[in-house]
Length: 528
Image (cartoon, rainbow, N blue to C red; front, side):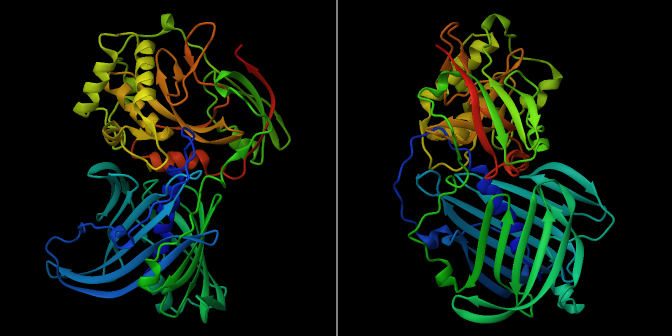
């Protein structure tokens, strides 16, 4: 038996990071009802072919809470079965939760993890699927005698040789069998990390026995603590019984904390009337109010609350932002709008090999899809100037996509079909359309100003002779040249190619900043 909340909690948190980018719409306040029975993930197990003699060993349900509000539930099952004359153990963890952003309708996030081991606990295969819109992201690892094969869908991402033992989660059963549940004991293990395609260190410590209230009933349980770093540091405090079953857990990473409490299936499936808004805890108040933020072309910011070395890791490789000075615990940076002219643009499609990663189709950005390619060609016609073509695509996306907070993180094909979404949908579709005609494109991740606050945001960057930001949701026009630009209230934390590394890239870009960064506007210039 393993503590099942470890990897499941990680993917729940990473899903929340993915839906943070939201500046792009007008806030709404409607709440829709949810049929909880329909929210259970319906999925044919990838272990289901040819199995026999399946026996359910255990099943447990937990309610998931944030800041005292019930946002969802999880279900953990352990089964044994035979296949080709051999005995196996399968752990299945399913979860469902709903959160909103700035008063929008709740977004539903479904996560499912299936892990296969032999009866001795040796890892064989694991799959995690996350669904936030019509399609789902599937990550998988197959353990072979000499290597671990990581896959995104059916595409092989990495083959990792290994020699030492490792686990999919904390092997609580093994610890209990060896008499490990005693105060002060600690154990170090290697855990498989699907996001970084690696094995990471994990420490499990036994704090001691404690009386804990579980839904009003006092229980004497073992308090244990797990600390590890997948893409980001994660700590889970757990209260387990003598058999290793979890009754309560508190998961902390970055600015997010969730609590899971064991309860009956019926109670776990109950949907709270309250709604948890993830965005309000991540916004940054501005010390200045901009009436026309899209006209702001240069800003000097004083950033604090996070170490200067984290700020130094922001992208400062183009003309849009630079570090001016480090003053103790604060850093002065300047952001600038880059006014790019058509005469300086290269023609497309580009044949340069160094741009291949910014042109390829991915699971989110299906630039090879016939429908996306057709629309891209219709938009640009016979145009060959890359900057003119990129602007044509940005105008089309801006006009055609209806702002909607209720979309999770959709793929380019979904967005093209549904024509709605927030800043991430504007970005994903524009990047896909640019790549479809041979213009290198990627996503920038950071914050921008709107309505007295700075909020998390995503916007496109295109290569047209230089890398230029072109925010399709917030198109700004320079009064002198008539060219589009990205206003200087944008601060860039990182970038993403919108491929199988998107979870990792998004989390690395914001995890050490979110809820901690403070900013002060020292000076600014506005287009007049």
